[in-house]
Amino acid sequence: MSLYPSLEDMKVDQLAQAQVRTQQAVAQAQHQVTYPQATGQTYPQQAPAPGGSYGGLYPSLDEYMGLEMTPEFVAQNMPVVAQNPPQNMQVGVRQSQSGQMQVAPVTGNDVGLRRSEIKSGIRQVTLCKDGSGKVGLRVRHVNKGIFVALVHKDSPAAMAGLRFGDQILQINEQNVAGWDTNKTLKVIKDASPKQITMAVRDRPFERTITMQKDSTGHVGFVYNDGEITKIVKDSSAARNGILTDHQLTEVNGQNVVGIKDKEVAQIFDATPRTVTITFMPSFLYKHIIKCMGGSLITKLMDHSIPDF
Image (cartoon, rainbow, N blue to C red):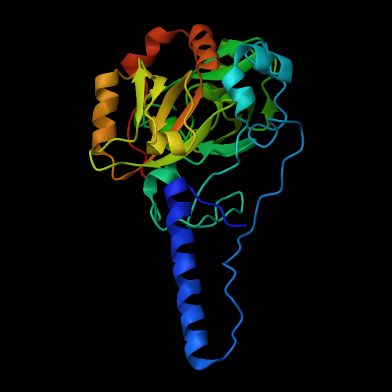
C-alpha cells in the first residue's frame, strides 16, 4: 500500500499507473503476448504504536501540563481531535526516521515537508553554549514538569530543534521530574559549554498536512489570530483534512507562534506551490500559552526559517 503526502499526489500517481496499465494492455494486444500486469510499487509501512487511540502520534502521553490526556478528556475538550484520529503520514519521497516512504509526483522532495516532520515519541537533542555561555533557552516548571517557554532566534537551542511547548525529560541523563525552574537553569548553567544532551518529547496532538496552492495561490482555509476558523469547499485544505478549532504553529517548518496574521500571510505568499503546515488543538494551545506566559512570545521567540 503506497503512502502520499497529499491527496493531489495520490490522484496523479493513480492516473500515471492507469496510463501505464493502458499502454501495457495495448502493447500486449498488438504482439499477442501476455505479460504480468504492473501492480504498483509497495513501500514499507510503520508498525502501529502501542498505547491506545493516540499512541501513534504521542506514545506514553498520560499527562501534559496538568492535563490528563484520557480519551474521555480529549472527547470532551477537543472533540475535533477525537473525531479525526491522526493518520500517521509524515515525510515523503525519501525514507524518514520512522522508515516510511511516500509517493509524491506533485509534492516532490519538498524542503518544507522535510522541515515539518513530527518525530513521534521522545527524541534526543544535543546543543552547546554560544560565546556568551548561553544556550538561548527559557524554561518553566508546570505541574512538576519542565517545559520550553522560549527559544531565542539563531541560538544554539534553535539550531538544535527545540521548540516552544516541548517537554524536557532529561538533561545530561538526569531526570528533571520535580525540578523547578531555578534548578533547571542552574544545571544548564553549570553544564559543559561544549555539549549538553536533552531528552525531549514534542507538543501533544500536533499533526501536519501537505497542500497544493491553486491557480490563485491559495490552499483554502481562513484563520484568525492563527486559529483555523473556516475551510473553503473543494480546496486542497479541505481535500487533505485540515481541521477547524486548531492553531497554526508552523508553515513549512517555520515557527509562526505569536506572529500576526498579516505576517503569516506573507509567509504563505512566499512559499512554493507545495505548503506543509503544522497545527494543534486550540484548547491545548491556549492552555500552553496560559501556563507559559504569552508576553514573551512575540518579542523574543525564534521565527527563523530552518536550514534543512
